[in-house]
Amino acid sequence: MTKIIGLTGGIGSGKSTVARYFEELGVPVYVADTEAKRIMDEPETIREVKQIFEDDVLLDGKLDRKKIASIVFNNPDKLKKLNQIIHPKVKKDFKDWLEKHKNYSFIIKEVAILFETGTENDFDAIILVTAPEKTRIERVMKRDELTESEVLERIKNQLPDEEKIKKSHYIIENMTKKETKNQVKELFILLNKA
Image (cartoon, rainbow, N blue to C red; front, side, top):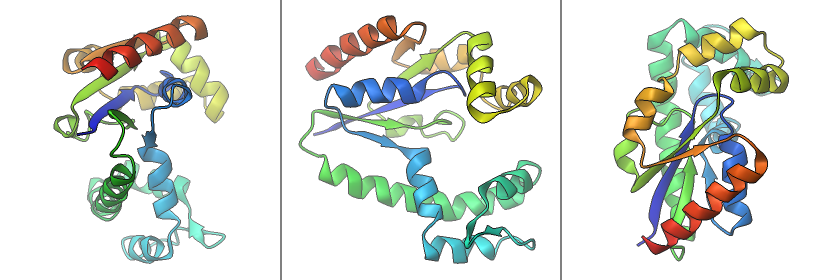
C-alpha cells in the first residue's frame, strides 16, 4: 500500500524546493496547486466557474485567476462555491494519479493550505517546511513581485508555523540548499523504512 505523505508549509517556506529534492530521489510528487490550475483551464471547469460570478472572469478565453482571487478574497460564499467545483475535480485527479503510482512505497502530495482545509487526516504522515519569516517575505516579494505588506497579509491568512508544527510528523527547516537536501535525504531513508 502506497503511503501518502503530505508536504506543506507557509508561503515562501520552500515547499517546491523540497518537493523537487524528493523528485530527484525518485519519489513521485503531486503538486495540488499546479494540478488545480490545470483543471481550471479545462473547458468544463471554465463553464462551471463562469456561472458563479456576475463579473466577466475570463482573460484570453481562460479563467482570470487573479480577478477570481480578488473577488473570493472578500466573499466567503463565492469562495465556497468555487471550492465546491474545484476541490472534487482535484480529488478525483489525485485519485487517478495515485493509481498510476501505486507501486511506490510512498508518494508526496504538496498542498499549500493542508491544515487550513482540514485535510490532515487524508495523509499517512505530514512534512512541514519552515523558514524564518524574514526569508519567506524576501522570497515571495522577489518571486511574486509583491510588497512586504502584501506578503505579510498572505502570511496572516495562513495558520502560524507554531500550530502547524504541533500537527506535523516531520519538520524540514529550509535554510541552506545543502542542509535542506541533507534533511530530505534523511527523511527519504526514514520514509522508505517505515
